[in-house]
Amino acid sequence: MSETGPQPSTQVLSTAQPSNWDILLNKQYLDNIKFTMEAEEEGKLRESVLVRVDQLLKNWIREEAIKKGWGGIIANEAGGRIFTSGSYRMGVHGTGDDIDVILVAPQFITSADFFDNFYEVLLTEKDVTDMHRTPSARQPIISLTFRGIKLDLQLASLMQNNITRTVDIFDTNILRGLDPTTVRTLSGPAVADKILRFVPSIPTFRELLRGVKAWARARAIYSSRMSYMGGVALAVLSARICQLYPNAASFTLLCKFFGLYSNWFTSNIDTRKNQPIYLTTDLNVADAELQYLSWDSSKKPRDAQHIFPVITPALPYQNTCAQVTKSSLKVICDEFRRGNTILKCLLRECEGQESLSDEKFRETFQSLFDQTEFFVQYKYFLRVSVSVTDREIFQSYSSAVESRMGNLLRGMERFNPNVICHFHPRGYPPVSKEGAPSDTENVYYIGMEGEFGKGQVDLRQGVKEFKEAVQFLIKSANYPSDKVNEPRLSVLEFKDLPPIVLDNKKKGELRDQLRKFAEMRKLVERTSAAKKTLRADATVHALHSEVSQHIQDPLEDVVPSTTPETKRLRVANEQENVLEKNTSNKVVHQENETIVSEKETDDNELAKVLAMVYGE
Image (cartoon, rainbow, N blue to C red; front, side, top):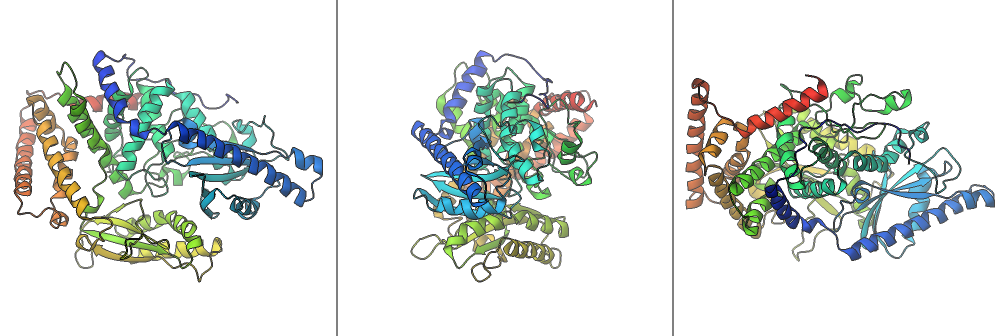
């Protein structure tokens, strides 16, 4: 592998070694993320599937070479290779995760060959199911399930006639002359390898990233195509924390992850621009061709508009969060603050303890992975129905429309700047009276928050642009017009949500969550030091705000306002508002009183990073 190109950042905030208490907390952390690991048998099955895909690729390339008139010798030497990418390559995949596979082929293999001929080859495999293709997506893929293992296949044809075992896709010279799509595809394995090479401890990095991925999934913010963070973004963010604290234990790094990013990133981008997170010494690119393809906010107006820059460490540099919108940024920032609050509560609860109860740690820590409360946060929703008349193309069409959802969110935001559009990345198929989910329709939901008075919100233009984008998709991907339906969009209220998203069991779970939120608030207030921190730091109220959201009007159908529990929460909420206001005034006027808050510690660390990276 070529070692040329970007070098890792050597900037650190602390080289402190883990204390005995850190080690004890870390053991508890590792015990509580075991659910993210796959069984050994599944790992062996993955390897066997990859071996079979490699065989199919080589045989198919040889047949294509012969069909195109190449001689027998050239056809036999055409070769072909597969490279894994993403979570699997970094060793942080879990049970049920898909594998990103890059199929590297000679230059005479075209995209049309891949999506037509190789697709047909895969159809002949008896162990292949649920296959669909999206040739018109930004990253064109064939998705399938092979012996129960989900795969996303991408093609990368190089500017040479044979692909041997010695081909080095990590040498940036091999990228010259390739189209941008192929360059992005080839960067996948390079990015994964660079991340592993740039962290001080690979095992610790993996432990941290497993917890971060589990959190993002549970909170419904793990999807780059749905305008949130994908696996690469979470890996870069985690790796940066590892660089800044090279000797820390993984649980300590998890706390630093939420502590730093809850301050680094802001959703109020009108007052402060979010600075990029990257793993290299700088973002300079000497090579002119690679510079043209690389992310550069100082020279490219479009890159300068990105509001959540998380930059990959391999050339050409890319912002892996380019699709993040203002609304999804707010959701991400809220989740950073929520995670930070939960872990602070956990640390306060453990403070001063000579030993640590497994049950006590688990009870608070698992709150980090509570499923999102999306469906009780909003009173109004935009319902997006995607359907077909032919189930054979359902997965392909649904996936393709998903890739255009970002157009809908950006359109809604552009014409309604004061409305928050929170998109849930999961689709919900309608359920028949017999309880069977539809295999021809998926329904997506966008929670909306804002002023909904008469004439104040107009979704028509945003919806129009979204439908136009889907129509273009249908034509460019050659979907039969009689087999796919134009997306149907409608506004509905919380009370009209279908049972599949909010059944009686879910209502019970939400009541449990309300109780848990109330208990955690009491935990924060248990000591006088915690009270000072809570009063001095408005952002630490993320969890408190979440409780407040749960007792707004949309929750009336779930937990009626007449219940004693909700009354207590409402009273506590009002008292807290008064307390916060009075305390805020005291802090302003009592200049001689020093309040050392954890927020100030986070700010100090943030200032150090800014000074090191940007020379401020």
